[in-house]
Image 1 (tube, rainbow over the protein chains, first blue to last red):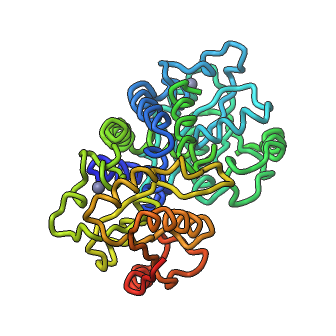
Image 2 (cartoon, each protein chain N blue to C red; image 1 turned 180 degrees about the horizontal axis):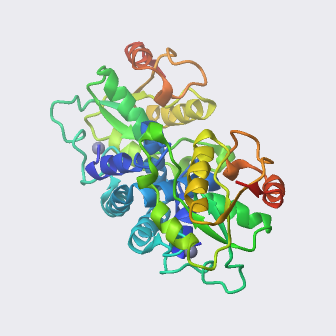
Length: 196
Length: 196
Ligand SMILES: [Zn+2]
Ligand SMILES: [Zn+2]
């Protein structure tokens, strides 16, 4: 087979959830039916690797030093919501219940996967939460075992520094992942948030 | 959200079978955990679009004018096997039962999808099969309705030009797609091929 095609199939397998058959199907599809799409995806990947960094304040993906949301003077800068991923942040934004800012962990504590406190940007979170403006931190990590453990760890860490810490109410089903929960449930859980 | 990230998510959706949630998950994974993989995939896509063409003889994907298989003097140049896709060709090669050459249609007749005889490289196939060397053409299109119709159409076309045309035996389950059938079944079907 074509060397370039083999390299493409091998490279497509770097995508999560893509096995050998899927990678082959994707490569054939792009080359036979959508070369323009392939070229666009090539450019998009190059551009993203080149320009996407982490916001200096909230740690989410951003093309600029401080993301638009963190720089928005209309948001309440005394409230900080901690989430695991940008997808969770998007979900919460969609509920229209949160006027504060965010901190995105880009992960969760997961001893089984070897992800400990040092692998998350917890120092960055502490610095962010103790800027003198933030008065309350809402922990909106997932209600999985790992998300709960992460919330507990962060709660202890921030309460030791005199911050008020709360947790989303358990309107979210136990074991549920925020990204797949409907907006109404998340909205209710946000309103019912409890002291952590 | 980051503009570059949005562009990446949108571009990942050009891949077959990738919806909005998968595209988002893929983009986050690449940017958070595998930027090297993202850069590699970018290069692989660029290179493939730039260098992968169709072999002048067998029509499959190739980086060179005539692919290695078509140029191999050890293969039997009097035998030509017609398949729908490069994946089918790979499957037949894996059976180690075929010493002849191939012609890859890169599709099948599919009136419902608006794919008629003019959309396949049938002129190229006729030229290839009437090179004066080819004595037998084995039709190895899928045993789906569309594959059978394609085989029938090609059979009539080539028999009208005096060629011997055969079809893989129905060892392949009716409705089955070659790509997903085990090699043993395909090997038996190749040995039992019948005049078409
Ligand atoms: Zn930010
Ligand atoms: Zn060839």
